[in-house]
Image (cartoon, rainbow, N blue to C red; front, side):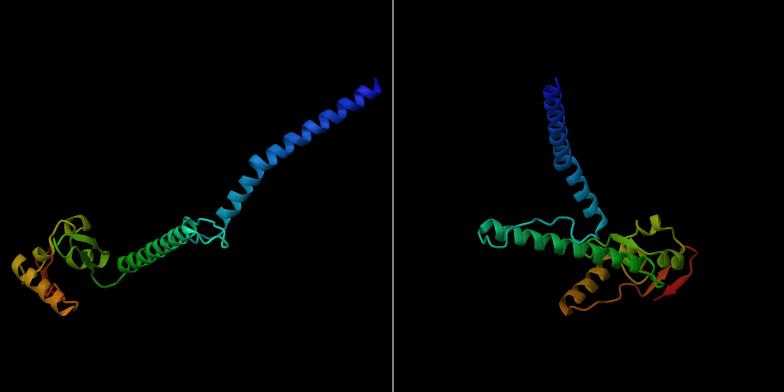
Amino acid sequence: QWVNARAGVIRVCIVVLIVSLIFYFLFDRPIKHILSALRQGARSPIRIERNPNNEDEISKLIDALNDAFENEHISAAENQNLLLALRSAPDPCWVFKTHSGEPIFVNDAACTKLGYPRETLMQFKVWSLSNDGDLASYQALLKTARATDEIIRTFREVTSASGETIHF
């Protein structure tokens, strides 16, 4: 009976060992890897691993994809920093589409200076805000800016919500 008991105990230990190894490799290790990756600072949202000794077309494609993802991640971070800087700038700032004159962004200083809520300013075309401009003069100003490759002030004077003329 003790021989059968010893064989049974050894079988139970082997089964427990196999189940433990399966749990470790299928669940514990991947979860620890994911948690350690989450604790690290974000470099790029996607980083494809490759073998550096293998220089075939797929490896070159992976390098190009990694570079593209890295550049996109850096651009997104820079754009976010620029947006934060413009949002908190003390000077009024409008960002608009040059071809249509539709506003993309208006900062708080512009809302305060003109006395309009952001939603109202976002409905104005860029030439409708300026007292000394209309669509034709705006298009001429834009044509000059493109020809000379310079930044030109679009607004010279603007009427605020209270009727006050503001000079820029």
